[in-house]
Image (cartoon, rainbow, N blue to C red):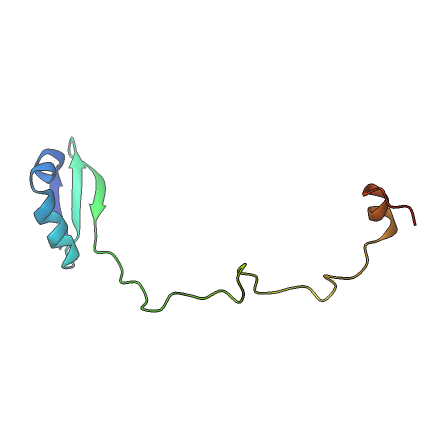
Length: 81
């Protein structure tokens, strides 16, 4: 069940509201009677960090990655073929 607190109450009870949210309760904070924010528990992070395929995080390199550049592109770099 979601419990609604006005901003003044939430300021005065923030520590206990965070504890309640951490235990699974949804806490809504309202300002002038309008819901503005929600405290919810943080999802647990996976125990092992995700590792990239290499140091730069590149997971795929195209087959034509190291093929020669077309002549029109080489001209833009100042190479005349």
